Image 1 (cartoon, rainbow, N blue to C red):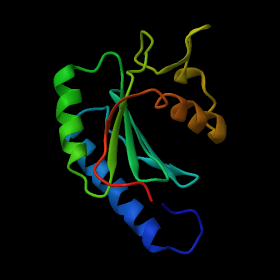
Image 2 (tube, rainbow, N blue to C red; image 1 turned 45 degrees about the vertical axis):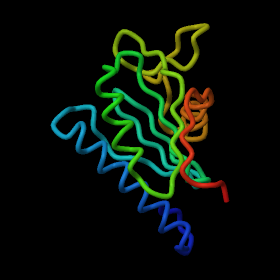
Image 3 (cartoon, helix red, strand yellow; image 1 turned 180 degrees about the horizontal axis):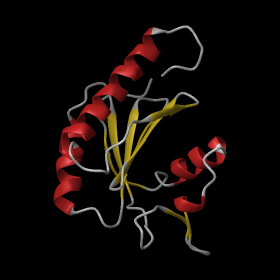
Length: 146
């Protein structure tokens, strides 16, 4: 979670959780093209594969949304592995829609997908990702909010 600030215990803890999320994804998608590295933006950690979107928010809650084409067995396995990460709450969100190429659809009204997002517009991109995890379906609370 590097952003030019001095590291604090909370930042170190979030970095450790982010590393654990990446390790789970690497185990599940190790030899597939879907695997990539997570990104930090404004004190939150975002990880997107072709199958899932994972957001580690400021409260150390892990929000997961799966692509509509993700096999239920992959979603179940991924959820079980993520749930093992200590000091986090797990929130499973509605699946997100994808277009014919597997890109995340972020505007159902006109069919716009992430393939059309200009990557230099970081704020717009990360806001779009956060909107995909707003509708929580299952909340598994292991720790109280700070």
